Structures are given as structure tokens and as C-alpha cells.
Picture 1 (cartoon, helix red, strand yellow):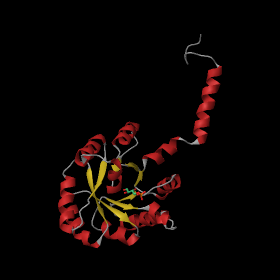
Picture 2 (tube, helix red, strand yellow; picture 1 turned 30 degrees about the horizontal axis):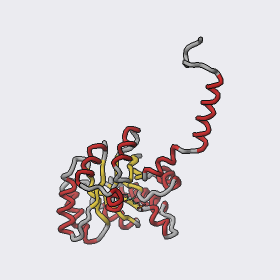
Picture 3 (cartoon, helix red, strand yellow; picture 1 turned 90 degrees about the vertical axis):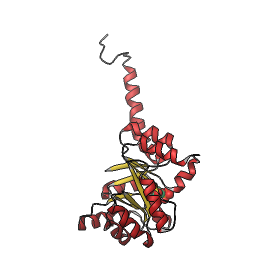
Picture 4 (cartoon, helix red, strand yellow; picture 1 turned 135 degrees about the vertical axis):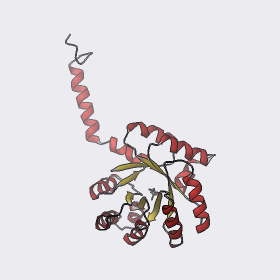
Amino acid sequence: MKLFLDTANIDLIKQWMPTGVIDGVTTNPSLIAQEKNGNIKAALLDICNMVNGDVSIEVVEKTPEKVYAQAKEISNLAKNVVVKIPFAQEYLPVISKLTKENIKINVTLIFSLTQALLVSKLNVKYISPFIGRWDDIDIDGMELIKDLVTMKKNYNFKTEILAASIRNVIHLQKSILYGADVATIPPLLLDKVFKHPLTIQGIEKFDNDWKKLNKTNMFNEK
Ligand code: E4P
């Protein structure tokens, strides 16, 4: 399973990359707006250079013609760029054309199995089902992940299921259990994985017990 960081924050990406567990990054217009980076192109290029894996960058144009042109521009930024395009009927011909040109596409804002089926038929690299936003309206978003995994198996689609809008540890754990190909995780949530109270308590106990031995060097007998 691949783990992506869901952020446009360069410092956080810099901090997490050396752990070796981050396989890519997802950004969106809201995440970019939060960072208030003066030069957006330079910031996105920095992210692409820092990350050893796919970096999703979303189009912000609206008409199909402009979305196509912007998708081409985004894909030319770096080799590891994936162009993120929101699901919409008018963009399907654009997506179809782009995948035929071997441009990697991540279709975002997926909320149903049928939406996912349509774009999987177009050979996009990723589909991004938004779990948390289903939960926001009191519907269990995890069910969609289960259904998408079944769809992928039934029809042998290559399109990867990228669990997005992950808001809590349960979302992440269920994405792992249900077989999502990728989970994109906000850095704050990833922090929580390391702050498990039993892990912290366990480390403290090992430290305290070890200190009682009063040894300056583990293997020095004196
Ligand atoms: C990532 O690809 C999505 O844009 C992101 O996970 C959306 O998360 P949100 O619903 O918490 O904004």
C-alpha cells in the first residue's frame, strides 16, 4: 500500500520524506491557498523535486478546453506530476484524450461507484474517493472504499483507489483493511500514529528500567 501526504506545506513534506514511508503527495487548491506561497509554480516544483513519487496537482480552470491546456501545462512541470481533475461529465472527453497521451490523471471528488467506474474505463492512474466528506453528512464513507475494491477486482481495472479526505485513524485503518491501493494522509494525522499512549508508555518503561542498570555503554562490562 502506498502512503501519500495530503499537504502543500513544503516544511512538512521535508520533515516526512526522510522517514522513507511517504510514496507521494496530494495537493488541491484549498491546501495550496492555506500555504500562501508567493510563487505557486516554484513551490510546486520544490515539492516535485523533494518527493520520490507521484505529486498530484489540481487544475483550476473551468471550461474543458482550458482544463485540457492547463492539464498539459501541469504535466510538463515534472516527471512525477499527476494531474488532478474533478469528476464532471464535460471533463470526460478531456480525461480520455489526456490518458491516451499517457498523462497521469487523478480524478478527484469521487463519491459513487458509478463515477468511479466511468473514469476507471478511461484508464486514469488514480481515483480519489472522499471518505471524510461522506461522513460530514452522516453517511459512512468507508463503504465506498469497500465497494471500489470489489469493483476493481471484478473488472480487473488498473486504476488505483486513492482513499482521500481521511480525517481520523479509523479512516486510515479501514482503508488499509479494505484494500485501498493508496491512502493520502494529512500530516497532523500521521503525527497521531506516533503518539500512541501505549507506545509512549512502553518507551518510558524501557528507559527507566535501563537507567537502573547504571551503564554508560550497552556492551561495556565494566
Ligand atoms: C486529497 O486528494 C483531497 O483533496 C483531500 O484529502 C480532501 O480532504 P478534505 O475533505 O479533508 O478537505
